[in-house]
Image 1 (spheres, rainbow, N blue to C red):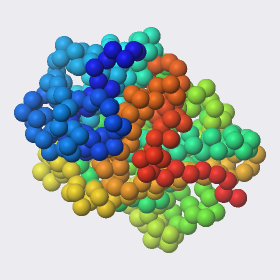
Image 2: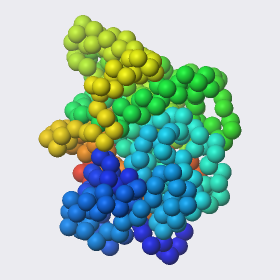
Image 3: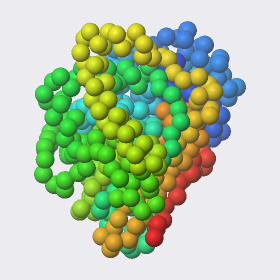
Image 4: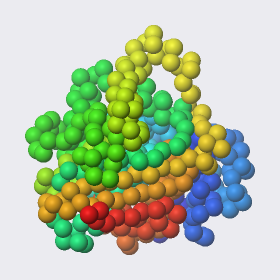
Length: 417
């Protein structure tokens, strides 16, 4: 792609909750001269959003493009190096934006946590994106940057130490403080509904559902992967961890993104690489065990309730609506820490850590999404060659780590004993 594009980044869905946060972040932190535009379906709402942003955004152009208009989306994507879209659920609203970006040979970042959407993207658009040189990078927020970059950073530390390959590898959400938005709830509703389809259900349950190429659907086989709903004694992951760890609600998406990275990197993590995710709920073995057991039992009940009409209608009355989100206080006082632990083929233990301030799903996600977009737009000479449906680690790797650190996100890795 040459410099004839009018913009470096177009933020599509700029009037939505995370879209506004991302635009505000870029207005304050994008390098001087970065060419940014705001896009959405309503010019009046875009204008109001622009007026509410920091002063650097007040001359950003506005682009009107409805999610149902292929022509408008094609025109938008052709004007920019990177389309940064926050319009979800992506299973409902994402395909035309994705198709327009691939057609234009532009790069693309989103926030999807929807495995069936990524699988569709691989099957329908990977080959065309590779031919056009378009980097399609899904899951560039809290889902799944800490997971994907955390494992990649761990792999680099192990490789630099010549300590062998990764084997049993587990991400632990060690601390988490934040809220839940209506957009996240709406994505869960869509997935719960889609899971009624046996083909979708097979995709959701296959631990390697995103590891294969277009049209290659493989269920089972290969290295046996951990369950997404496992209860784990912390000491089995690392001697320093106390208590029982609970399933992490987004593990069923994040683990598949990480495994796709390993496939795209030609198995660099190791031939016996196994990866799971859990979260800390306390150090006391009895109390943490009870909490972890309750989470394990309640998660499928919640998803089932979202799929069943009568209970879904009841939940719709009390759960956040699309466009809703946590308060400014919740966003600014939030934080997260994720630790990834592994044992290598030489028997050594290593870990990596990502730590950030701000509500994980919103404030911190805006930082991660914004920096992913800037990496693709401005650091092209540092990126691996080639396009296709990629992951944050496979598409941006070291360049993204450098940008995240520059944005104040702590990233460390090394031996633990």
